Image (cartoon, rainbow, N blue to C red; front, side):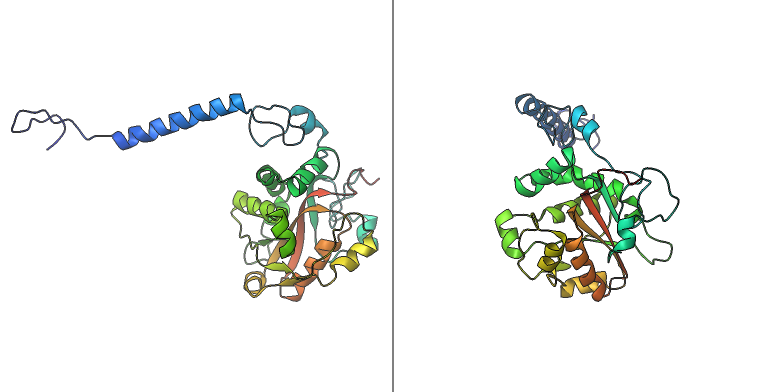
Length: 279
């Protein structure tokens, strides 16, 4: 019986009932209305300074202007900015004097101003939701690391720098793992959060000089059996929140290379020491 026909008892039969679709439309309308009410009561704020902004997960105009974003030209290995273009493959004095274990490093911003605030809020002030915006910025800034190379059979795998299990328990989340997850979502790449473990509980790196940092993390990382299957024969993009002396990512890189990764690149949100272009 089709819509508009009469039943035997004379009742008019209408067409197909579309309550499910109408219900979905109503649900969307109520959700949008609820969001607008919530924005009036608790308006979205700047990730760095808490000023009111027009949408979630963004910076206010002032913080955006002060954000020390990094861009080429830069050192091919360490991502340190140059004051002028030295040509393809140019290396900084730091990379020449102490070549890193990894191939290339890229960062969203220098570790100062709003970038330093964002890292601190994510890492120490229980703001895991900030990783969504930060991870998306990292996906864009690290596009050259995350794209396949001509000689590679497949895409790289993203591996976050792990926390020791006791520090993970106290902090409740690994900030590097959250950033890696958002990068993977943005680009459709495999993320292997369990590929590396920190088997040695190390001191906080804050306040240590370069030599002490290197001693602190020496032998701290190992590849898990699950990670071995994931990284073997593949290039790894190692993810951390901030790069300072390179001790942590250097130790993690060596562990990955020992267990069969073909190469390791490093993607961080903030780069300490990259605030002034090299002239």
